[in-house]
Length: 329
Image (cartoon, rainbow, N blue to C red; front, side, top):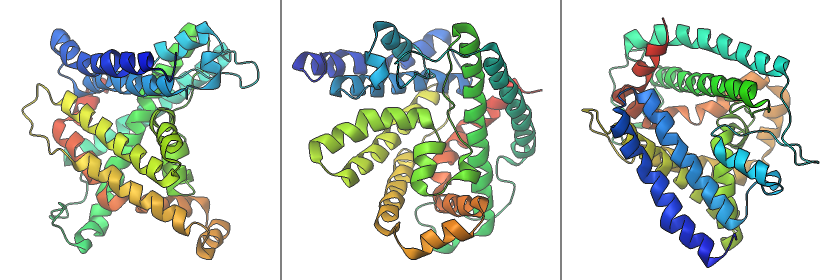
């Protein structure tokens, strides 16, 4: 039962340590070398960990605990199924809906192929800035137009990689199971209205959901402090990405720079906090009414771009994007 000593002992003492350790042995057993496959293996225990936390603390989605079959569907699939809020039944997916998702996958697949073809030859830095962007860099280095453009390019291809892969998985699962699956992303680069909208409703809805239920809600309930819960959520996101990075470089001759992902999400926790402190300012309501939604969204993305390389550089160095090109002609 959730919230009991037995639940916490089982979760923290067995389930979470087991799923965290599993990829190390699984990758070695299968002798996986491609970073993309390794990320798939590493992402599964991350989702299972946060789903275990939400189950222990009683924050699983309402429909999940309504029926045993719902519980099994939710915890047995990496991509989340969509449940009807009124009946708690999984929503059936028609052949037409599944094929429409498959069509979107093919469109994104072709688009991603073009992006990779353009960015792979220049090592995902199309503009040669000849500048260093470490912690010791100056503010002008972080705000250099070429640096911002490079960060936008690799951040956008990261989004398209994530969206393409999950669309393919979602379409296959919908076709096989006959149940509607959630869309992971919703055009975060061109439709976001604020940093919280970018991270909370558009970038990676799957991870956002498990972080909200597995970290944010338990921390907020125990501390009654929304800001502290938000910071804890961003820190947890940084830790999970550091874990994924450690897994995908297990057998590679690559020295990781640990802490950059954690720093990236800590920075965004600060941006998130500032947003909530000044969101009622008149200039923001004016810009929302006056500026084109795409301009607003790009301004939101601009709050992240100066340090986006703290997140993406390690994936470039580890060969993730290069390994992704294996699936393209």
